[in-house]
Image (cartoon, rainbow over all chains, first blue to last red; front, side):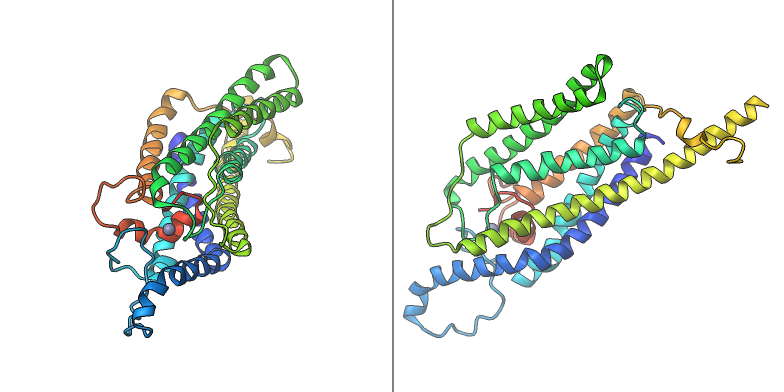
Length: 268
Length: 71
Ligand SMILES: [Zn+2]
């Protein structure tokens, strides 16, 4: 197993994860987005529909544009179909590549854990650091929530927190490996967990909250959207992790068998 | 074969890949990740390299559902 095979296996696993996430998103994410867009349009509509109560046959599929006046040529069907697939597929591929490389770093560097076990650990830690914890601090919002004026600030906060969360995992792992040299694996794991939670805990307290949900926005739609978003990402990471771990397992058992055969031959 | 050495695969110690060998692949994956994340997660939102809003609109639902701030 080399760096290249880890990366390629990661890209394959990530692409599959992205495609499954697309299917899951259609089932659990799109209904809430449609509801939110319907609310956004009914809130924006009165001024126009008061004037001419029957929309003049505009059935070309409404794209919800944010502040920008021009509609562009992209329909809701495209956004919810190929557009969504592009996003989940691309993000799946790059996450797969990153997890693959991280698994390549981890292999053979955690005591006697096999590359299969370290790969599963990397994927699990990745989900917590990249999805779960940022989701808790800055939960995603559906259309019609959020002011265009603060997009810069919100983007900076989100990516800043994401970076802190990922760096906290790296710091926790580096410290845990030091601890592992003199203490038990249990102690090392506990220290890693404590380091990570301390860092993201402090960041959560220090970094500004984002609360732009209008009072009138239905709580059910918000909840449904946020859970849908979490499930979409969880399905991506689950498939990515399981497939990559399986591919690493296959490569590892093959390599282990080769080594054993060579040793047996040398012993004769 | 397995009768001769039943625990063979388990006794093979995992060998780590040298950092020097990993570094270029890691750099490649990281660059790819930054570019893709930028276009899916932030282009024509907080930043705008390409004029118009087609990129934003195309990845719109994914941007929302993958947890990025959209608008
Ligand atoms: Zn939006």
